[in-house]
Image (cartoon, rainbow, N blue to C red; front, side, top):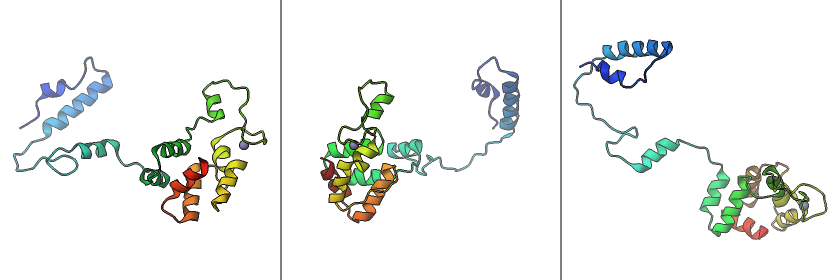
Length: 176
Ligand SMILES: [Zn+2]
């Protein structure tokens, strides 16, 4: 049984460009050359089962994504949702710091940190990890902040230093 040409024509939008027409002719010759054999083949979804599953469909559509370990720790932590959300904002660099507001064209008289007198912009690294107040908080927990400005790497470093499963509870107590 050959695939019918009118069905194939319905897949193309007319008028065709020269390149599209050449491809169309090429596809016709390939498809008409195919001979479908009756067989006992079993049709399955791409995940290998004949039953539909929304979960598997979403998995296929989303694909595999590399999620940094800090997000997994955050999801599994037992701390309050408001703290989880706060740390999620930090990890995603979405916390409404003054430089972020500046990038969003919000005019402020000053974009420097108000927690210290260092006259530096209030970015996340300074506010949460490197500033005098934040440093004293981390120091009280015997945690050393690495010079890396990526919050995900710093969280990895904290996790290594603490060697405890409840990193988020400790760190959220420090900043609140
Ligand atoms: Zn400061």
